[in-house]
Image 1 (cartoon, rainbow, N blue to C red):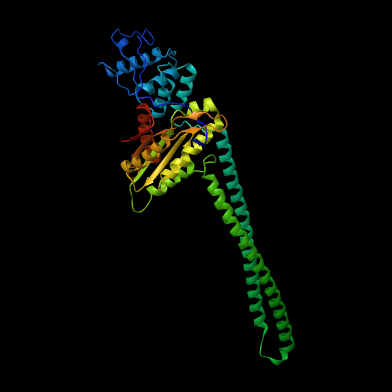
Image 2: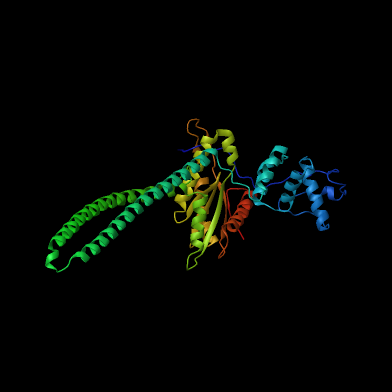
Length: 394
């Protein structure tokens, strides 16, 4: 046994069915034949019907099965489900209805929010605060750098003006030096003035050198501070892994290389994570997230592993196609699911901690959001087909 954090006893289910009910008059009058048909998450509807009528009846069937009112928000959710419009929504519906249970209105409202085209990734408040603090530190370092650069530039400008004034004085003084003997007194006075000017310039130059030397030390310290702040801004505070921003930057770097190379992307999600949080609390859930993140990073040491948000991770495999990346990821999955863990403190045992994943080969020039969407669709299939598995995307 390894006392690393909490987890819930569970086994992967091997399929998912949804109850079939006869449909009453929910949205218009449905025919007796259509009332025997059922909605499915893969969008397939038994029987033949015209496209619009079939979609209308499938949406009505979904609402009737879950006893949801035909409001615009519920209709929109049903439309996404029966048309396979959003893999995240489909996965959330499958999780909520597992065990042939109906969606509650509260669940429908929550899942419906996931269907928004720019829905934010749910991030724990502590993570958000830490990320904001890291960004604030970076902005302070940038402001500090700007102030020191301005001071440095001021020293340089002052030294340049002093040198220019010294040069002008030398030219002016030299013009008064003549070979005429009667001007000896004037020449001596001019030479004395030039000597005093030279000594003053030497003093100013030494002072400028000292200031520049001190500024150079400050600049070295500032470079180190900026590097540390930049690192913090790109690091997930819970796991220490790169965060979503850093991942997207790395993805762009790989896509913009002069010589293209095969790159694969994987999306991973901890199975039944909500049950872990509900049963053991968020502290144990955080430990589970750290554990899985570390195992992914250690098991796939040639990959970039980042925390994408919540219990999701994203990975980049440079130089590997999807098949090779899936093999490496599956070995880590098998290693984690073969172990058992105890909840520190309570001694409760988790028989199996697992994750599911979807892997795709990134197309040349493909946008990060498109590659992530394809991998997320494959991840949804892995969840739908029983969890604790890796699926290849198309």
